[in-house]
Length: 329
Image (cartoon, rainbow, N blue to C red):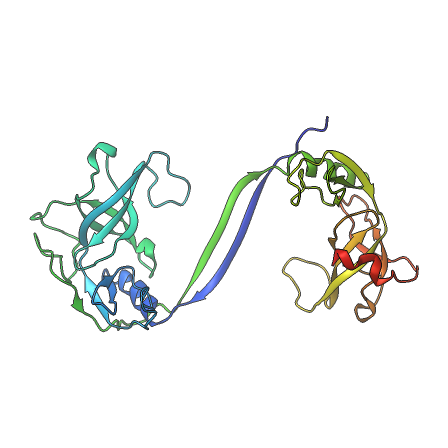
């Protein structure tokens, strides 16, 4: 039996996001050690602030400053921090309702152990030494006893010893405001394609395309999924399909993808391989992009050392009749 494949996989998508006036003021305020919320239609103060009322969808613009001290409303202990989390040592994830706010802010609490954390405990912001206008400008929260001096307090409400003052109006105006951020989206994990797709990939390495047939509806799935999504039964009967097929639908790509050495425009198509019960994706080559059409008969083109077809090209056969592939659109 072929060994089931697995490999590390990293999915990354960093993107630049522009900020509206509310989020810009919030992040710029953090850089200046000021926490801002927004007043909702019913008078409640939302922290972090949002641009539209979650109940009425009305536009919100009335900014207020809240305290840098607050109360833990709920928490969970994190005994094994992962890379790039707020703290490298075990800590608690906490929801903190800052003084003057009516909603809670999610962040990390630096505490020696879970026994030192409790709902209702008082905490305060620990500011990062270097701040650039991001949620990480709050390095974390730390336990705080009302009445103790707060060396990192700002000038807003709830910063004096023992106070839990209400939110105060704020213009949201700062010098050199933050107007955009880069969001670093990343998922790092080990992926296994499973039994069915392991066999499919092994066959591709031999320049064969193998699917699996449902024992109930007899549809042949390529790539195989291990089970029929219609009948819900396992698919174990392997069937070699193709290598030729028919273009069912297609699109013309006019935007060049990063790190892809293919000149635009080019055609990406759904191709129903002979004997398959549904179409797979493939690039069409060997023909001008404006001559690709539904029903075009194609065959795979492999490159030396390639693990899958580089593209599909016309076979020279007559186009397939529409009735032959209409159920595979």
